[in-house]
Image (cartoon, rainbow, N blue to C red; front, side):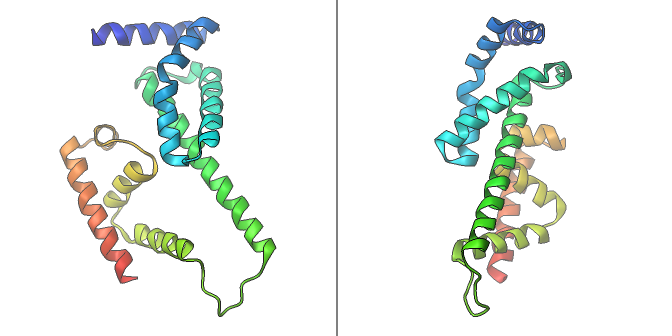
Amino acid sequence: MEANVRFTHQALVEQSREGNRNAQYQLYGLYVDAMFNVAMRLLTIREDAEDIIQESFVEAFRKLDSFRFESTFGAWLKRIVINKSINHLKARRLLLSSMENEEEILDDEQEAEPDQFEIDKIKMGLAQLPEGYRQIITLYLIEGYNHVEIGEIMGITTSTSKSQYHRAKKKLIQIVNEL
């Protein structure tokens, strides 16, 4: 049955490439809920996630010619959603940062807000992790990949991904606590 599902999805992708709106609508229906969940995990704001999903599907359908079936359509689309979500978060952070800078200039004696302080400590901790640990943490926590996907990306087993993630998390906590 899995081969039939894959064939059906492949046929829908091919038809969508040709501009078949019905096929595009069917692909949208198959993937919208899963992609919404991915965006919500990253963005946490429903309206932002809905916007990102719409933008992601528009981009996916516009760029279907670049899809080469090297992965599943769902994995390809998920990368688009994750990248758009991360870019949205970066843009929002920049906007919030510039708004805070305009509102008031902090005196040297004032402390940074605890949340920003913790985020900065985590960023410094991430930078101190060995590259393999940093990659696992980034793929799992920031980009939202699961351990099976991380294993495929990095050419390791799922169990290795899980154990490396737990070691990386433990090491990150140790580093952050020492900062």
